[in-house]
Length: 230
Image (cartoon, rainbow, N blue to C red):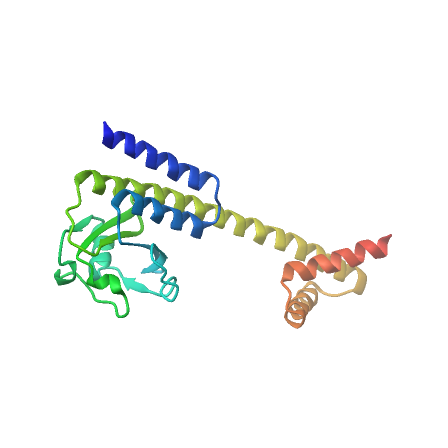
């Protein structure tokens, strides 16, 4: 009963975090805070799959020089093994002696004893890995492992939603840019007798010269035309 109650509390907190925050980095950092609360960890890392590499995206301890730069291949180290097999790894002590372990220079966590690594998935899609570490040896209970796995599942859903929102916004912006550039080209063709190709080349040149986006250049041309029409 206690396990179910704790799961519900953590789940509620995750849902609230995702629902009221659209900043992905803040979501990931809050997820690690929850993971720390659940496991009393000394360190948590969260890796996301990007272009066939696992990229460190969030850390419980300040690791600014590694965030976004530390990358691991699928199958590399314990983290890579978890990514490849989509299975949880739980090591109670001497994790650094495990045959799957890979030492990374300048990371104090590489000398920690206990290591819990959980895959982040959404449906059948692999998304990343959450690593939990303890300085001293620790026996991870089934409830702790279960809670971290549940958190990982929720992270997977949040990241997938964020990705879809990002792709949708990019698509909307691309469509809006095309609509505006087409309108700007029509104005140049009408007012200056340009061919469509010449109008397009002019937009590109102005974009490079002014260091502005095509969308901004098109908006400026449309605004000037509207003011001249008045």
